[in-house]
Image (cartoon, rainbow, N blue to C red; front, side, top):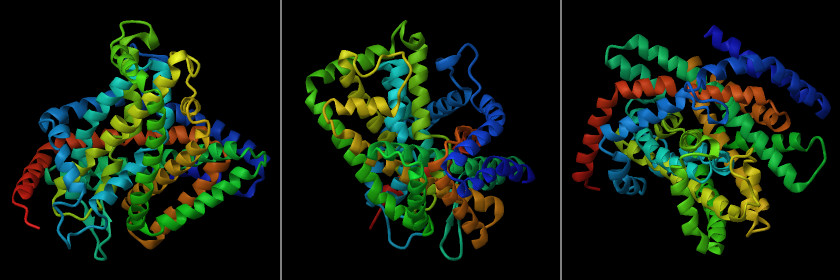
Length: 506
């Protein structure tokens, strides 16, 4: 615990002084923080994202991504393609067809799904797809889809365990996630020490990830997009934006998962809907080019040479971006899904498998189609060249919708906001696992989280957010170890749920 506190102080406590500085001073301080943190960031990133031998540069394939994909493939086969045969059941479950009144929990199946989706559907779907295509060509989209389909199985496993081993307090508050099923589940299997160690490691990584990638990075990108749209040169604009967003975030997260769920069930369908509507307008205007776009996706997936190092390069870009987008196997979603109202753990696992499908198979694929269609004449981007991310996506939409940058700004802000409130819950659950379930611990975390929103908006602490990104993917190591060991328990719960559905009476 002392080591964690030292790391926390080093990476997150130092920036608190930014709030008392003017814009010019903040810039110099953020630079100094980056320089101080960069060595540790490089060291941690080199471990977490250690590449597969023989892969370097933009084609570097982190072993942690391979671990995620192999685990997802294993779960897909072990559970007899639950990602496909459980799809219809997932739709019916999220609609509440098999829900009874009075079940323990805090949110509905739909609210749990949207809360978890709000943590994954975001900038990765807008900028990440453009990066994958610019580096790997249209064929990277094919491998993103494959990775998304496989990731559905991982989400099913982790979210089933999240409900099975959750704690429910005297006041009905739910405490759940990998830290609980690692400790309790592995404890049942006479692996107490391993379970406790993995749980603590996961919780520490999750807290760090919630402050950086789940907060400061989101706030920074949203502020940059908003300021660019309004065209202001006021040096304090980003600071004002940060305070405004922090205030709204505070109102939501103080209410806990119930309020987060009630907000995300409205925001997520709206933000995904408005984004897809704009995408369908662009695709509709170029409908004759759709067959060609799909042809490029299929043929490009198996290109023997050329783009980003040929077949391996295309595969790497697709898999990497899918893993960063849907976080299947990372364990974060299991924290949100654990709060669902149900007595059937596998029911929420079934619901959770919809996440990677919506996030990667639907949203990312639609984004890719828009970019590929718009790039028909090569004017938007050049495959294999340096990626522009969100800029390329915006330019692709603007070929048909000149006013789309304004819509994109709304989408970016909503995506960032929803990601922040979901990750605040993930981080809080891990924080309270480490420091206890007191009100003091709860509000200390929430205050720190809101401060980080302001800091993230007004200072580009790239080294800190890079460090936290590494933390997020480090979460997958203890999580996947636990999932593989406890796979038989999940299979038992799945059988129980199938039987429950078969004999269900409202």
